[in-house]
Image (cartoon, rainbow, N blue to C red; front, side, top):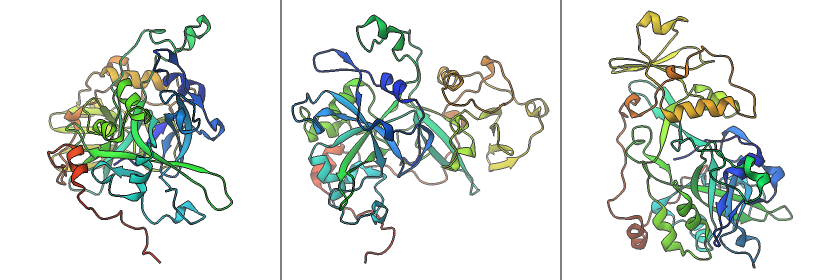
Amino acid sequence: MCGRTSCHLPRDVLTRACAYLDRRGARRLPQWRDPDKYCPSYNKSPQSSSPVLLSRLHFEKDADSSDRIIIPMRWGLVPSWFKESDPSKLQFNTTNCRSDTIMEKQSFKVPLGKGRRCVVLADGFYEWQRCQGTNQRQPYFIYFPQIKTEKGENNASDSPDDKEKVWDNWRLLTMAGIFDCWEPPGGERLYSYSIITVDSCRGLSDIHSRMPAILDGEEAVSKWLDFGEVATQEALKLIHPIDNITFHPVSSVVNNSRNNTPECLAPADVLVKKDRVSLWSPGCPGTHSVDQAGLELRNPPASASLVLGLKEPKASGSSQRMMQWLAKSPKKEVPDSPKKDASGLPQWSSQFLQKSPLPTKRGATSSFLDRWLKQEKEDEPVAKRPNS
């Protein structure tokens, strides 16, 4: 599933990060709709507003369907047929949309049939792993692997004045979504979306059994958005797990959705010795120590690595990019933490994951399209309260 994301970039920077090639091969920047409704945050939860990409053709009948706009939308799809005046009265959860039942639920089938496909933008998303033998859950931040690019490599336009404005920093995560437009009685139109989910890839299956349907690359994003040229059945072939993903453990500060600081996605310190992994993050009361017995909470001395004799691995390229990215963040910096050389930053990979005590649910081996055509019936989402 996907229940928490980060999207903290200022509006103009986010725009540059979404530069694209239109059908004529010209590089363009998407235009905004309702830009004042965008609120950057390191810790976005359902029912908050998040930026999504969609085709301009949804709003302008004569537009090219390859042209894009960005619009802030409510996370949690409100169906166009909803009759109440308050969207919070919707009696089932539409934060996520399972790929295997997308054509069985009216809430998702109807907008998908109208071509209402969107791409949800984020720095990355958070997921929590249940730890063996305890009621503790370790949060992780999950995102695209980051590769350093040369400044000016991807020009947003041919104008010399724009050369310095080209986005060459963090690669945004692009998640497939469905949106709808709801008009309450006598109220303002509300655009809202749901993130499509699939079975987790092998690298994430020990954290959670589900993951967002991630569109990896410009071609996948373009096909998903271009409902004028790409039919629904063809677009659904893009909905599947991908392995091009990386992650690192983060502080439990992200557990509270009211916390909105860079610390939410900053890598936690990882100290490794044999079969024991210790996780420590600035601002946390102790060290999360993971071994064969499970996860414990401890309070290490200031020089924990020296006292325990633990060896700190070198940083991966993506985690180094994360720290550099946070250091240049336009928001306030991460609170003071123990200083390290760049070479002392921790490495993040699946070697630090404990096997989940819960069985991982895997889907059928047949393709998603085959499952969709069979139209196997599944129950509607569990209601928040009994229907009246």
